[in-house]
Amino acid sequence: MTKNVFLSMVILLLMSAQSFAQVTQLGQELNAITTGVPFLVIAPDARAGAMGDAGVATSPDANSIHWNPAKYAFIEEDFSLNVSYIPWLRQLVNDINFSNISGAYRIDDNQVLGFSLMYFSLGEIAFTDVSGQFIRDFNPNEFSLDLAYALKLHKNLSGGIAFRYIHSNLTGGIAPQGSEPTHPGNAVGADISAFWTKKIKMEDKEGNLSLGFNISNLGSQISYSDDTYREFLPANLRIGAAYTIELDDYNSITVTADINKLLVPTPPEYDSTGTVIVDGLDPNVSPITGAFQSFYDAPDGFPEEMHELMYSVGLEYWYAKQFAIRAGYFDEHRTKGNRKYFALGVGMKLNVLSLDFAYLVPTAGRQNPLANTLRFTIGFNFEALQEKKK
Image 1: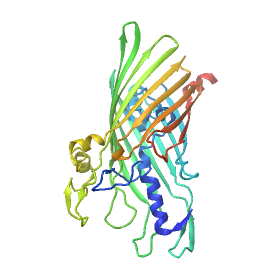
Image 2: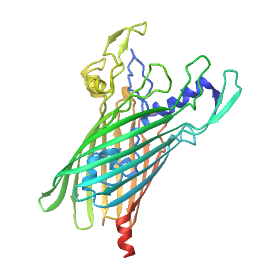
Image 3: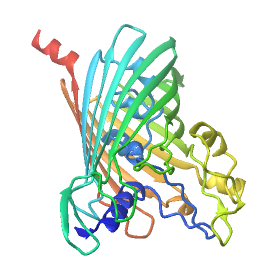
């Protein structure tokens, strides 16, 4: 993939940012919100990925730090670890990969620590100058390192927080001729979350109802040069519910649904000079101000604000708590990115290991870079391993 320096950098940014949203076209129908480091909102695990990226209120596991850190307080295992791998954007290139390792450690009956490391490799790029002369090869990459704490506030309620360090190196210090030198971007973010769960009996069937809430990636902005332009992190509000019904001693079904909204300013509409805002609000604000502003700053008002909501629904069936079949659907409005896809997956739980697979099927009626996306997750239950040794 040999391009001049400028085009190479543009391609990198598009692969990273526009895999989640179409290019913003102000003054036209499309007005998608774009952010920096969008890899932070990739569903890292095959279980939630197979349920349409729904996970804020499902039963806790080692990957809860991404969906809702507060869920950790109700995790069954004392120490668990999940490793995930996703070959990403295979419709575009064959060397972009996403990896994740997440875990949880129980301190006592009420407190749990969680951690996560996400790594996003954008493949190899051959940088050349404007005359086509080779400069060097470079492997753009991004990662985040997370630490979470969950506390059980009541027998049915928990709260959680998470802190995140983000490093993004997209250019390797190379810049187009006549432009500012570039450098890796660094940022910090935080999550705040809550989780409520309660056993509910309907007629003669045992069940469990859960509600979840998570505000994620609130923090600093990120920049790749010394100029004043900085990008927002993909701050996100996620709320959802899940209901599990035990059909009998061997069969159970979970139904879940999430609603997401980016807490990032909507691009306004400018006049013909591109400098004067004619509709919407100024997006050059602080991250906290931008989070509040995101609820009322859309140029087309309330209808456009509603278009910014993303919906996930999922279904999970377990047999004997050992074999699972999952399905889900994700929907994003066509003017805000047009991500629409079904997801399918299976899972298997052994004494020590668990295996999960998910497959994405786009439905937007066009060639989608997310088509044929697979997710693989391997889980380790160290408590079961110790019992097996005994």
